[in-house]
Image 1 (cartoon, rainbow, N blue to C red):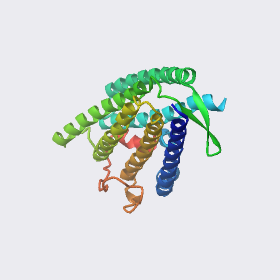
Image 2 (spheres, one colour):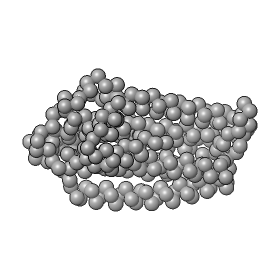
Image 3 (tube, rainbow, N blue to C red):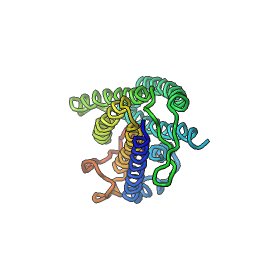
Image 4 (cartoon, rainbow, N blue to C red):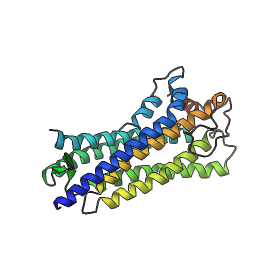
Length: 281
């Protein structure tokens, strides 16, 4: 890469990070009121659901930072995937078979990605080093070329969430033709709707990252920022939607954080235990 290419890559990376941070801050300003009402003012505010909610929205300085930043993004991705598994577990009526199957696949993916991130960043640092470049009087760290392993990383993430989507669609099909099934509750349409919408949108983002992994410049930096930011943002909204189903006495019909279809569902007293536990996890 020439000096001008490196400068362009650094500037694009700064712009994308600035835009991502601005979107996160703006979204947080919209959801703060609902977050306080639906999470922090509950009887048990510090639960697994709260930790996942916070974790899914979080986001040798030069060389070490690359590995650190990648792991932060990966932890965010795993928190999102744990949320998706809990939603799927609820949809399938506390099925242990689904829990074990998803759990084995998830932890297999965790091991593969952990090794991949360590190996990928090492190759990136040694063979394709991070270069400090002077741009407008400041020093930036940019990547000379995309990592050889980056497409594998995004393929693993996309494959796991595609598997979750298939199981979700299967449950949606059953829901359409088995409306009276005792395993289905009034929260199921919300879980189905948001999970399918999320996976389709994020699937396009992951596909974009796979394509960018084969480009010759540092456009991979752009896809990575979007791929780590958007899933956490959307999952935060989905968790708020689930809380709204239970908090029927505290609905916010005009809430700016409610970006999906209006929710007119009512929760019955015989809600299945796992679905009800989504509120108290």
